Image (cartoon, rainbow, N blue to C red):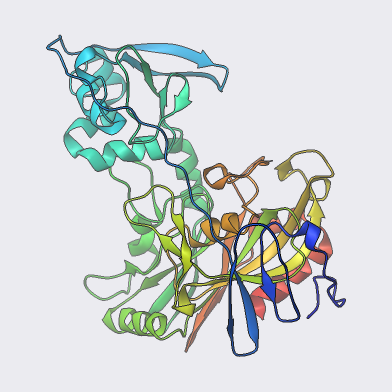
Length: 409
């Protein structure tokens, strides 16, 4: 087998981040590793577990007046100064989950507050899911730090809800969305990074789903419908069905493994050779997908990773904010069925998170994007769509050529 430079790979165990197995040798190291082989293709299984944030049990509550809030400007060492609405957690909410406490805090706005942020206070009536979205988008700070929905709050803590960053940005992103391909009852649309695939509870920002009717006016009644989704920071192709037959074809192709979805990604570190991550994912009701220690027996749930071009931060054209000699790798990822955060979680479990992906343990930061992940090609019988990412032109020419060859291959 050959490495990214086309040369025969050499075994250098000291640079491998995790125990692994390949056809010609076995690496022995501390801990344990699971390896599997299908036919003549060897793949590596990585395991990881994620620690849950500490929580404290709820304490007896007391009857106190409900809180009031005033617009304030606050700052903290962890975040820049930002205008927003601030509350102090009352005694009765001590020990509550953050998403529950938000329901209490948002239920009693002053007329001035409601006039300033009417869409925010409407969340008190829209339910728990909408309030969780605020937390997941890092718009809720507890003690100056982003709070997850399940964080247990303490009486006296300061909670700040930041202004919506999306309004203007999302409108400009909507202008960048476009129809890439329409054929045989299916359509592929380009979603720019920063735009949501579907509408979010409590968010007025435009999403790709809201543009479907304009892009596909000839769709059957009840259509078009989204067939897959991408995370907001991920750019690339999103599929839609223009009618019942197109949706049926897509579902069947996914079920029997006839869909081919190819992504480009910029990861931290420089692995030595191509690999496949086979670990099972737990995506139930989680902001962050958890990688299990057992393998998924369904190969359609695995992530294949091909090394395309090694880079340093200095060679990324300013995409990555790091010391110039920080090591990176442009890779191509191939999946058949997609699970929530599959590529992000699998890459992190392999020891090579997406550069900039804080949620999955990245140590580097990206300048204009949260991270660099792009769905560049999707194909199935009688349908094929292709789209390069806008950030690819910042990389060296050889990296661009290898990326395009991977997508078209």
